[in-house]
Image 1 (cartoon, rainbow, N blue to C red):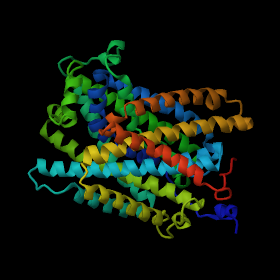
Image 2 (image 1 turned 30 degrees about the vertical axis):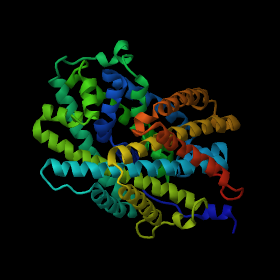
Image 3 (image 1 turned 45 degrees about the vertical axis):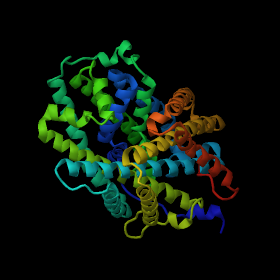
Image 4 (image 1 turned 180 degrees about the vertical axis):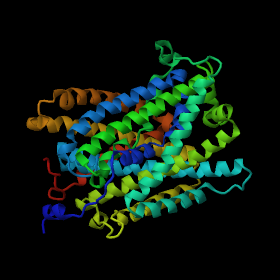
Length: 475
């Protein structure tokens, strides 16, 4: 039996996910509350202070430009796999396999990083309320076990769990934002964040950099293609909705915190948070909503981290599933569970992989925040921008080679993708030139970590052999 026959007969996942369910999965992966508690102080303290909301808005704009070409090409990529599938169609199997390796590296890295973060966060919460100090890996492995159970079953169960966590998470932050605006800080309801002098007062590029890390996983809308109710309509709607919702949530909440603390003080408070002498999210919540509000946000921060790691687990399992079906990974990974209709074996393999990596960090005694989360988030950020750059190039090449598919849509197939390419090149420069700020490590260690996604791209492309994979159909 040829590889082409196997590819055409490989099992597919099935489901009836609508745009709302898929948006829940994607926005949960972005972990909005986690970004507000972690990335926002970094963007303000190391970036441009009160002008940080503009950084989040600019990051959302770059991703929105990227989404135009991504969505326009969607009808010509009738296969799950997101970046891998798009690059394969546009640039061929060799680069497709290379970007598949990058995707596995990036998503595995951010997932492991979140396991370190949630282990630390649970331990910090337990100690805050007078509980015993337990090593962070114990909590991380407990969360990993729960994720393993949910990931093994049908995607609908994960979507429900993520949906509940996400509604509560966004709900409490929306309340916090409204209360802040109704009872603002010392400067009143100020729009100084959006004035040119404030935006340019510090390193806007660093603010954009940390904003970008908050969008990791947004393109996962295409990963759930086979489980969508109507892929041709559901995937584009979910993609645009995810970018707009995430971008608006970040930018508005970041501005609300400027209003609460004051544009002249917010950079200093953010820096105190980075130094470990304050907690911008929880302290501001305590001042605004009281101790009860602080407690609620603290709990929801933990559920945010859990929702994030569960979503990434599902994304990685589906990447492996697609690659197994294509013969790029062991074909066992491409099997569908007969009862749960899920990539169950792929899910188990992903659980084992995460367990091994977290165990290595634990045995080596690596700090869960700076060492685990910081370094892994850095690797994932480089991987994400690299994947989007390659995918945008694939969009441009595909429509140049297939002008009939473009249908005269010059803006969607040429102009906007070129603008996205320029924005992503600028973003990659920002990430690499400030990489030590992302990882918290030395220049040497940061250089090694930044090189991992590029190495994966090269190795994946070089190890590809003709006949090993088949291009997805283009119509």
